[in-house]
Length: 378
Image (tube, rainbow, N blue to C red; front, side, top):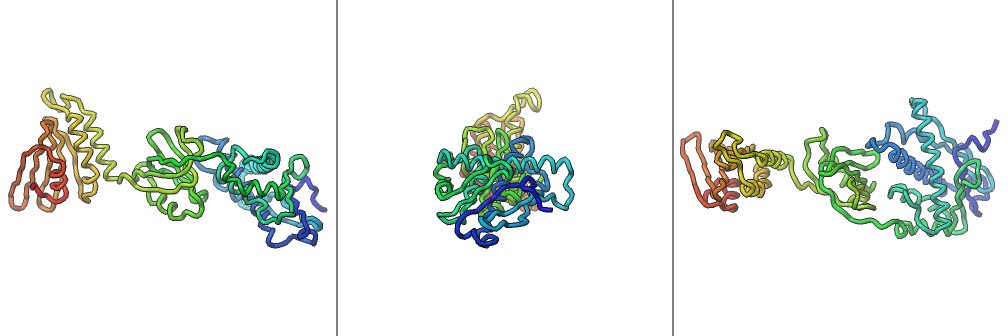
C-alpha cells in the first residue's frame, strides 16, 4: 500500500528539462540536504526562543530530525521524504515536542521564501545561521529551473524558488539588516562544539557567541580559555558582529577574534586588591588606617607585571595605610610597601646569609617594577 501525500513530511518538486527523465540528477540531490539543513537551523532557533532559560538544545534534538528520502517520482523530480522516528530512544514527550518544532520550521522556511518572492527583501526574524542555510536552498539549479517546497497537503503553504528568487537569495547579505562590529569582555563559561557557539559571562549578564564553522582556530581558543568549573579562567576580549549593540546581553555572530586580556593570576590579585579597597579606618584597631584610593591605584597599575613574575605573590594591607607586596626569590624574602605618604619602602632579607637590604624613597613606579622583576633597588 502506497503512502498518501499526507504521510510525507514536506512537498518538494524540481522542474526543468533535467528533471523530465526518471529519478533526479545526482548533482541536484544535495538540494534535499540544503532543505534539511535550513529546516534544522530554523527549528533550533524556534526551540531556543521558546526556552530562554536554556543555554543549549536538548540532547538528541539534531539527530531526531531523521529526514528520509524514500522515492523520486518520474516526470518533474519530486523527492518523497518522510520524517523517521530514530531507532535510538526518544521519549514520546520529546518526540511530540520536537516534531512540532520541525514542522513549524518547515512552515517558517516556506513563509520566508514566499516573503522574499513578494517583497524582494531579506526575511526577518531569522538568525544569521538560518539565513545562510536558506540562501543555499536552490543553489544548484540552473536559470530555467524551479523548485517548489512546503506543506505536503496545502498548495497555499508552498514557496516557489525560481531564478528571480535565487537572485535575491544570492544578494541576501546586502539585504539583511545591517550589523555592527563590537567587542565584549568577560569569561567563557560554556562551549558547544556541535553548534560552534559559546557563552560569555560579562559584568552585566551573559552573552552568546557563534563562530563560523570554518574558524577552527577560534574554536581552539574558545576551548582553551573555557572556565571548566564556571569560575577559573582568564578574561577575554571577543570581537564579532551583532544586530543590536544596545542589548544588555549582546548576541554575537561571526566572531572574528578571541584574545586573553587578563590571566587567572592577575584576576586573583585584582580580587584581593578590591577587598583591600573596601577597608575602612579602624579595620585593625582604633588607630589603624585603611589604604587611600591613591595607594590602591598605584598597586593596581603594577598588578599585570606582578602576575607575570611566575611566583607566588601576596598583597596585604598594614595598619599604617600602606599596601605591602611580598614574594620570595630563592633564599631572599622580598617586600615592597607602597605608603600613603607617597613613599616606597623596599626590603630584601636573605634567610641564608642574614643579609638585609632596605631602601626608603619617594614613590617611583619604574623603581618598583625593577625591584619586582630583578630585585634591583637602583
